[in-house]
Image (cartoon, rainbow, N blue to C red):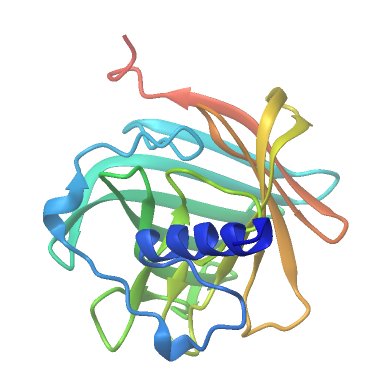
Length: 238
């Protein structure tokens, strides 16, 4: 067996064990992750995607008017029999609320952080104008995906979410050793992902994740959304 053949077999084994990793060209109908609630743990402590209740992360667009406030709530929501952490986010454009989102995450015993859906509300001039993009795993054919692998490997792609025609985001690990500077600080050993969706051909983002912090930077074309602060509820500080 050649080195190339051995490498190919190892890669295939990793994808099968993950239960959701797949090659970008795989047909969507082949995606069928097995969700066993007994294999999920109470805490989301993946080093690249930690979710500690009471944590607030603030992101701002460099040179622009976008601002995102993300709060890890103390609440959970059961989806497909799995207790998920609820993360609440607000997006602003020029200080005007444009979107609210409640995302649901859970971590399995292998450290993979699964994304089980979201409740999204869009606003214009203070009025609710839509809920497009909302989905819940286990309903209407929607399936969960992995937002962060427990053992990321460069070159492996995976589904982050799956609700046909509404939520089909994909991710691929590009690097585990990058560096990035944002207003919150300078970080090494940064994990970089390429994120895209077949629903919007040609559009893609880069996500930068720091150990112990999580997402620190998103880049889409010339736009940079940077982490500017992290804080903890005073009742949770110790």
